[in-house]
Image (cartoon, rainbow, N blue to C red; front, side, top):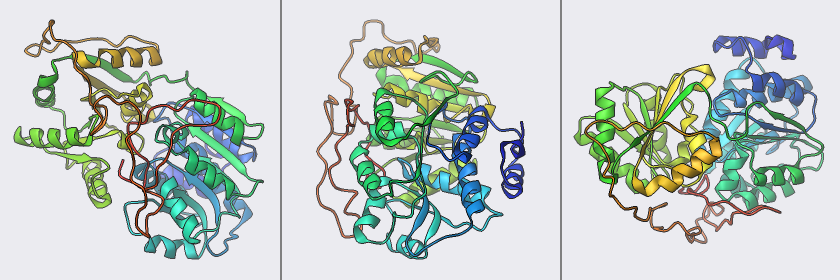
Length: 437
């Protein structure tokens, strides 16, 4: 099947073709016609399968067909994402695929000045991609009008719940007109997601193109058992001995990411970190250099797990296992995208054995173990408590969050509570977009 057969306009198909895409993916084949029909949709697919185009293409089609109807400060289609990086990535897709259409789009997130965003919103937009915290800022300052929203998309909804955004989402929903199309996209379907869908969606179509919480078959996964104090030497050994030129490495904490970058630098390996304590300009620069191949290693916390889309990324390394099993799926989903092959390696010490069991239970498979010669773990080593987040040794509950904030970012610094009607909240390893995760 071609994109034209899905009912998309020639202008959209032309833009898609220029990006080298001729055949829609399974999620696109099912989601595009469903969105074009105008009903609500609950869609799940493995990360890296073209989910973003699954909703951006038909949204562009629907808005273009209706013609421009912008009013000052108004928005016709609102796409909410959990992180700044993902928001920027989605809006880039909107611009690329809509290049031959007379539609205006923009992206807003925290960590940058709000005044340029106010100027962009003033004339009205067809499509706005936003993180919840910064969107609330604009709502409170009266710089955006959501009463004209025709289409709402919650992208990576599971991650937004993990990051404690449910209260913010409810505030946004309260400002929207009751008559609208709702699209909920998620890489995983949890009970919390289904509870959210029940309260948000009206008789939705449901699409699930892969087994729940599964990992892509094109990703080769393996575990390297190693002692906790030998992870860094092992990582350097793997990078050098295998001649890895582009490696995305995930750490559990911001401090751990910074420390690893310093250690790799001493080994002659170029690396930069991306996490919530980095300025937005530093995060953007690191990601750009990594995508361009100038940077050999990008070290990231889980904030980046949903916002990095790199063609042919060959290697993902879990330097630390995530404390939320679902995050393993999203981390390794940065490789093996759009049908390409990839390799996901996890360095696992004795402290993380319970985490590994949780991951294997989630993905319903046992991951192969491979001991690297010279890095054999001590069989008598005893597990120690794991620092799940900076400043939180036991990981029991969320850390207190600052109240207040400045005039430009009041929403980012208010406390946000996890949870969701009718379902217990899951622990969140990172804080929400627009604040320091």
